[in-house]
Image (cartoon, rainbow, N blue to C red; front, side, top):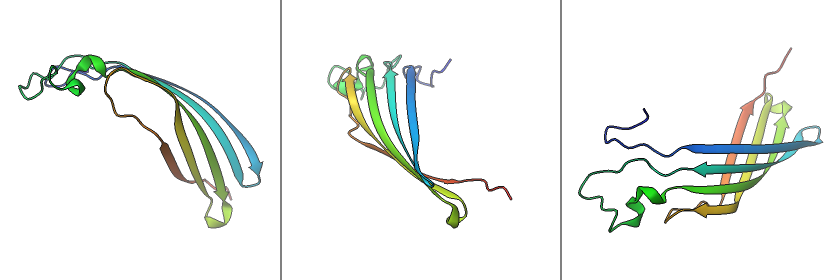
Length: 121
């Protein structure tokens, strides 16, 4: 189960989040978040002759796992005059990064958001 047509599958991913927010004013709130992610190695390997793990370390399926802990700050702005929209933005930065092998790192994540808030009449 979970294998593709070449008989391999991505490793398991486990993620946990802790989040806290505070209202700063009538239409403004700020939050902090801590995200921990553990990713497992790939199960199986591509048998194509062009993929040689002995020559290309990034093709090694046993070097794809890792643990990353990120911290984030967010702002939420509620705009009732603009048809009850909420605009949000969050910035996440890595606090701990333990990657097993040559992998690309994420230096910054920005999460924008636009939400329509239901208005009761």
